[in-house]
Image 1 (spheres, rainbow, N blue to C red):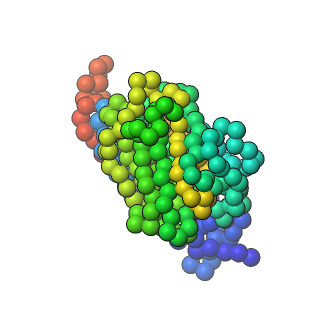
Image 2: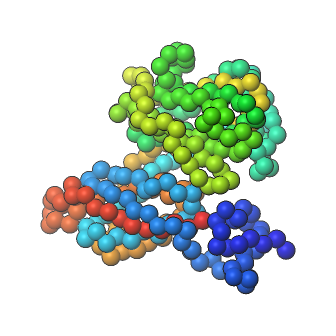
Image 3: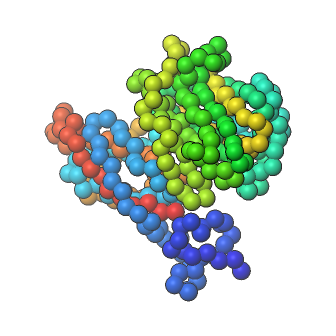
Amino acid sequence: MNTFNYNEPGSINDASYVGVDNNKLVVTTRVRSFGTFAVTTDDVGHAFPWNRASGMRISNLSGKIIGIRKRHKTVIVDNFEDGKFPEWIGTIASADDLGDGFVGATVSGDAYRPLNNEVVLDGTEVSLTFRPESNHSVTIAIFDDPSRIGMDPAGYIHLTPSNSQSNTKQKVTFRLEPTKGTYNVYLEDVEKMTRETLVTDATAEFGTNNMIGSIIRISDSGTTIFDPLVLEQKVNYAYEQISHGGTFNYPCFNNTSEYEVVNLGTDYQNYTDNTQTISISGFYSV
């Protein structure tokens, strides 16, 4: 029988394992807190702080009605499983997996492919999981269309041993903010479930077509394994309302920042107090 410590989130790595809590077998699906957090918001939606999680519990003690909604529609741009790359231009080939049993890919030189054919809204994210070898030098860039390759990008990062770990499974995420003309880049250690910010509010070029037909370019020597490439398309879903005193659990696919919250106010008829800054608290589970 394979077991893990139910109180240690980093040890939960296989759904077939049996949990042990204080030397006793855990037979439960109860939510356990692995940390608390808070988010400040007003009449504009704000994302919850990033935490790797399978769920979170939110309490509204703000005195206002709040709205909560999912931020993204997840699109698997490429999982590299079929070993075919018709949408890629450049040298790309199948490769060993990243320890999860799935097939990845390597890139030799420059390779690029389309990301989407929809308008890119503020908060849209592009992520790529990878494992580089020693002395790696990997460049990833996003452009509003192929004609801008080599010019100013919508997102850019150069990964080396100085800012990323060799022989380690990681995920780089670009958060695009077209109306602001900026982007952020985050790097996650997948095994340790930690994340750091590599780039903050860097100037970007998003073109004049709302990033419809945008592309990603990867530049590498062929030693880094990539898998998968994911687009988190920002969507303005309808808000679910939570009144003062309400507490609810929400499932997470990956992390707590998948959700955003907004102040809907309480004033009779016109709700003009929705511009007031309020705080929402909660905890996340792994």
